Image (tube, rainbow, N blue to C red; front, side, top):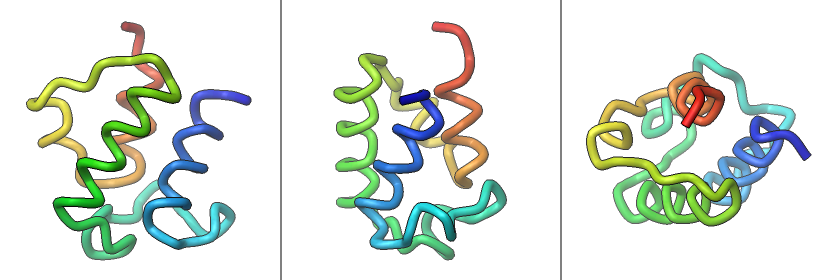
Length: 76
């Protein structure tokens, strides 16, 4: 499974939105309902499943699905 598919699976699981309905331009809070506790869960799950580390600064900059996908696609 690709990093993008894994990230979309995690976003779907945490937001309760079907994976096929998640679009790159969606806002994590406004469109997917990812509040602070869910955001923390999202970060932990992404770090665990993708074996990456997400800094506090990088996490704070993630506002849209595209931001998340862009971060995980960037070289470590």
